[in-house]
View 1 (cartoon, rainbow, N blue to C red):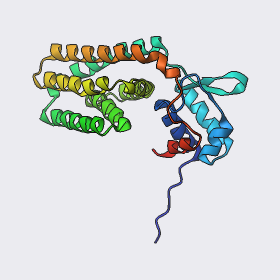
View 2 (cartoon, helix red, strand yellow):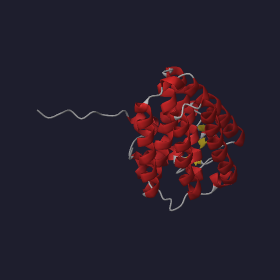
View 3 (cartoon, helix red, strand yellow):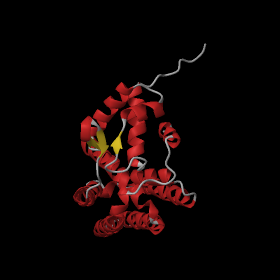
View 4 (tube, rainbow, N blue to C red):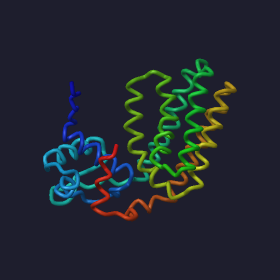
Length: 236
């Protein structure tokens, strides 16, 4: 008996593809989106594309543009400052409330993430690198067990992933991140909460500083862009 192929709703296909294009900066901040062009690239009709854009507007990734069109939301400096301030406070909060419950199993998970992170940098697999970076920080919220806070952080990290891709042009930042992650791991292992707090603050301050240097580059067109390459957006 042949297994039935699960059909993914076309709106979800469009949503996933466009969202990936926004996060990876295939679509640059401020860029106007042409529904017919995206529909042609994804080989679907205009309706699911428009429905997907409405969904993404609710997440703050797209906004109304001229002539009833949609455009990619800009990465505002004020938003970045707010995100990093929130992250510093909430990550510290998450670790603090479960601090004495961190065991070797938790340390092993973080160390495994660290090793795979280093491998992704070596192979220049930026998508995997940024995914592992996000998983490292999200582990603290999963450990806390607060589902509402976890959902909130996931949405905030979606916005911040664009910042990660923007800073990919600074290879020294990519190599410093796992070093700073290791400092956080070691401070947890030592059961030194004050040291954990300082390591998280230093790490996030360093990343924020790089973004400030790269902020203007968000408006530069991506390299080797073509309509043909947009078909890669479906590879999720």
